[in-house]
Length: 362
Image (cartoon, rainbow, N blue to C red; front, top):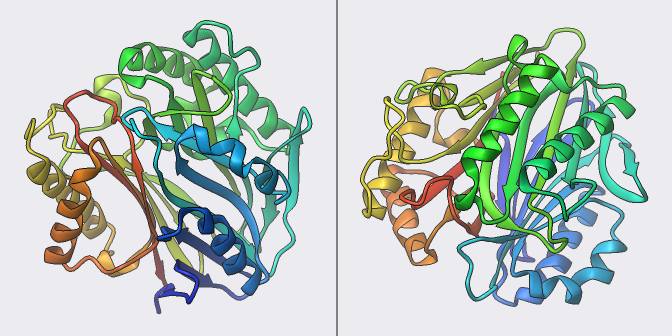
């Protein structure tokens, strides 16, 4: 049995994982009429009687005010991102994670809706979105430290430890100017909080601005397992650990339940087993190698392309999107909820990055 994936009449591409106690949905919208995207996404959630736990919007920040009232009335956390490489401020796509069959509890900090907690038969979950530093006028390093401390405090408020974190998304404004400095602060925070003694979370670090003028914004997923569930990091057969080049994240993390397995693959790019960028200035070869790396991770976990549940593809140049689509078709990668973003990747010579979640039912 596999997660069900289909396209609705409202131009939303949806994957649904149906479990005994609840259903999980990923909804991705890339509509021809850009201002219809949010309405289509909400309609898709309403049709499934689902609560949206988080929503990504990949669009120019100048569009934020146009959607602000509508977004604030949803009652769910929205993360608005403009990729550093995005010059024209296009509206590209929206993606949401939604839940039906369970009633999640909202998480509010400082009057802001920042996430939800919920519990299944096998685990407790905390999804946090749009975490900001307390002082957006502080130095980039100070903002980074503050944002991680805000994450830690929010998790603690919900009864979680920071070491329960299995996945982070890190959005850095003008990333290429200070990615090494960010990594140094993150590594120090992980050392101080004991994350390296437990499990380093999967992660995506991408160049993206936000409407608040902050240097950094963080999303996080934390999980506390109950009975019959395991959580473990997964290596990349074609790459060395990211920690070898002082970037503190796991290549992938696998959550195994009695009903299914969920593989969370970090943002992945054209990097070889020595940690070096491969195929500089060649978008086709970079995209091919990146997908070969993803395929090797899938095969190491006895999974396949047909198990893809959701993903986000990051392009430094949106002209490369058709190249990805052609290669994906050649490799037999089926349609699945894949959002697209125009953003800088963590190195100036990297042109493409992709993150995916994979589900195989048992």
